[in-house]
Image (cartoon, rainbow, N blue to C red; front, side, top):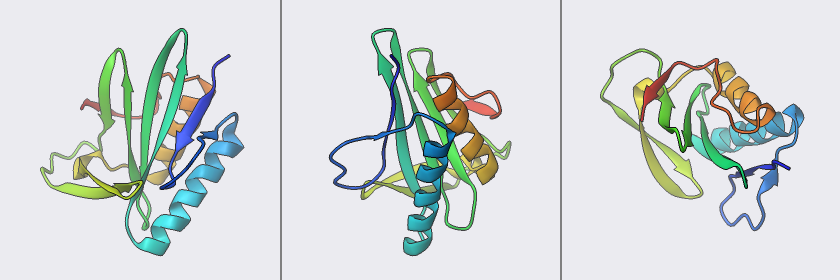
Length: 135
């Protein structure tokens, strides 16, 4: 059985189990609230692992809307892209650790949300509704 889990909160003892769309939406809604309260973008790591393989989706959300997605699997690493070529880096927080991503990786929040839903629904496949660039 494939189990998709998420890590988000600093000090989190157990991963969140994401079994359906409502679980994904609850995670993203919590992330948005926390990012708004801190006024910094935040990241969650969503994992799928079993005897047949593994995949990881990093999902970032920005307080004012938007965010980014990256997908890592044995097939390689990719990150979302808006199509711009800005070399600027922006900081996100993952469990109290700063991570920088290229500004051009940021996409609308609707794309971030749907990508996370698709990852969970497909048991870790790379979401199709995203424009990807090599990471």
